[in-house]
Image (cartoon, rainbow, N blue to C red; front, side):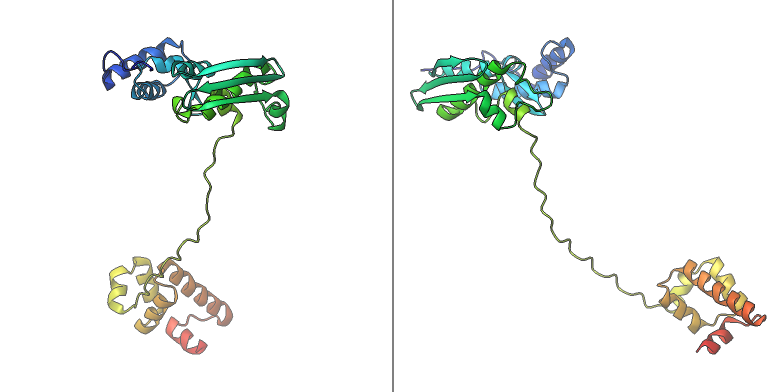
Length: 257
């Protein structure tokens, strides 16, 4: 039976944070952010291991925790698993994995399989430089995940994460509800007095705009006083250019009517 992996002492969050600071400052373990180190240490402690064990076994790849293939294999063997390698070359890796609770299975990965999966020619791929190591990592991960998945609990190797494109959440187009129309303002002289600007007051005096006409203008332009001013000025300019006289707004409206 596997011995208890519980750490000899419990570490609080302050202890973990202090260790994370030292790790990031040292630059020895590839951890560039304090938060990454803390997250991995908490993950390791949740598994009953010393927080520093996380630094030995895990990477952060594309924002996700990844476990080294060697660490996966070590955990598997410590949990009672066995592996027998039949072939390990630059073109093929083949091994049989056995565990009392999961039975036995033989896993094989070849360079041709990697080519068919589109892994060889990916930018920054290690398949051309280290084909045997990449094949070995794939066989270990698939074999352990098949026979005894509890030992790695959904964690992938760095090689698998690099070869897998980041997941993009599916965006489902949903028809946005149509905004409810704003209630129409019923303009009267009292509401107009509350909002009228000095520019519009001067315009009303200049062209002697009567109250009913002013209310109608507010309704037509939905209270936009700048548009009201531009509209009235445009009408009066056209009238002056046409007839050469300065009629007031009321007489102009009557003629148009």
